[in-house]
Amino acid sequence: MTAVRRLTEDMINRIAAGEVVERPASVVKELVENAIDAGAKRVEIVTAGGGASLIRVTDDGGGMTHDDLGLAIDRHCTSKLTDDLLDIRTLGFRGEALASIGSVARLSIASRHASEPHGWEIVVEGGLVHPPRPAGLNAGTRVEVSDLFFSTPARLKFLKGERAESSAITDIVKRLAMAHPEVRFSLAGSDRGAIDYPVAHGDEPFVERLGQILSQDFVDNSLAIEATREGVRLSGYAGLPTYNRANGLQQFLFVNGRPVRDKLLMGALRAGYADVMSRDRHPVAALRIDLEPHGVDVNVHPAKSDVRFRDPGLVRGLIVGALRNAIHQAGHRSATTGGGATIAAFRTGAPPSAAAWRPSAPMPAFGNAAAPSWRDWANAPAPAPHFSEAAQPAFAAVSQPSADARANAVAANDPTDRPLGAARAQVHENYIIAQTDHGIVIVDQHAAHERLVYERLKTALARSGVARQILLIPDIIDLPEDDVARLLKRADELAELGLAIESFGPGAVAVRETPALLGELDTRSLLVDLADDLAEWDDTTRLREKLDHVAATMACHGSVRSGRRLRPEEMDALLREMEATPGSGQCNHGRPTYVELKLADIERLFGRR
Image 1 (cartoon, rainbow, N blue to C red):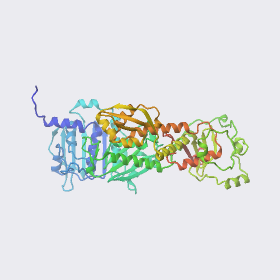
Image 2: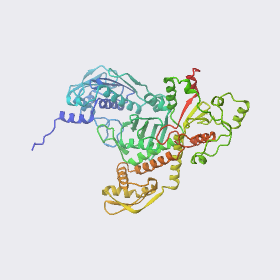
Image 3: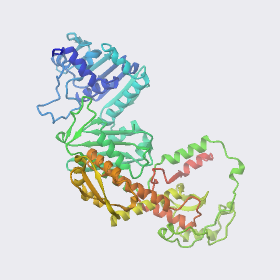
Image 4: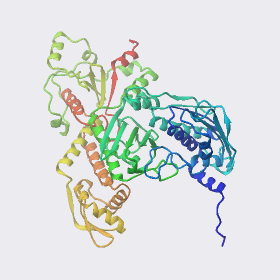
């Protein structure tokens, strides 16, 4: 048996570097966080070779004295930690970063403190420390890292290409810049285009910084999030459900100013949008959580991207509830980018032929009959289209109206001043064209009605509860004892969702009732999924999702179908109900139910502007 031996200091540093310095982006993160902790108001980052050849970070922070500089490159030396390991109020606290970087790269640190007449520089090469020497520096600190992993060449094989590493550095800088809008960040180098994020001086610096990083489109299509519960404050902005992405790279989460990629928070974000977005789409959001340091443990991993909350259920519930409330308050609002994309398609597409514009069927003239209630006709069998006036040719319908027609329109109180305007026509037996005071709105009638029916179903479920079906013979499900304990602990909540369970001896539960909405059910699979949810989130999300999915399917089959011709009053009734229904801006799958085109954009298409 090999004898136990003590590792050398160099070997200890290299092992630590393997955890702290994963790739060049890890180095940038540690150095920029040090600059922010030093009180910097300007941070400049320069890279080359994707950060493997060069990383230089310069700041105007407080700087270090001669003695501090000598200690800074030793392991476990830090100015950011008190005796209370849970009272962490800075981005760094371990005192491992500089020592780890110096053990696997050529590291140079030049710094000047206000109390000293000149700066000092110290150099570390693969763990070998050179004594400090005088250096010319006005103020702050300059850290230069070159030849990353030169002392551990095997690590270089695990790096991705220069472009990928540069992209990872950009992402790190974006996240830190977003968390600290009071600091100016610049990023440049031979491997990238220059990026500059000036200090946000406006009334809402966080919003201004979001516009710099995520574009003004996000600001225009986002919802303000603000909620507080038991000392935990949630703030930030979340995109409309129809403003989404194909991946989760545009999700920015911060805990006490620290960018994190926490599994709990990412799951809560997805749960907040679960009812209004397809599973293959991802929301865009920038959310900040602020709480007392003792309420969160940031000492989970050396990378400090994972955190552990003292009360994870509280944090998750706060996020999910705040997001759902904001989406509910948004009502029928939909992303404005849909109209821009439509205009772009008109501009870049080939001009339609004359035949394409020729009307193939007469357009209906609009009568002035009183509109019935939307609920009266929405679920009824589709009647044959009936209009109070004879049909007119298409171009006659849009010709100059007579004086009598204009008088009738005024008398009918045409609702063009409403958000979704007044219905003017139905095209391709699925799309409603409405006129507003500022443009036109195109509505997908099936998608819109599907959402309305779904919201009614959810309201009915909330009002009268979930109908249950009693099993003639209870299902006995064998499960691990820990899973059984979790399920029985939440039995009352499960019963509210229509699932009645009870203990059936050690390691088993008896299922006596199931939700009627789910029909025939594989109860074992459902219970296994529920137990997994409870183990991970301490929440019965899976059953709620299944019920929501069934309700959405029922809504899809129960909504007005594409191809049904609607009377003018029916179309107007649909628009009014959409305006009054939260979430009607998108269907159950997250697609927009309408697109708005501004009059100014339409006029540009015809050269009027």
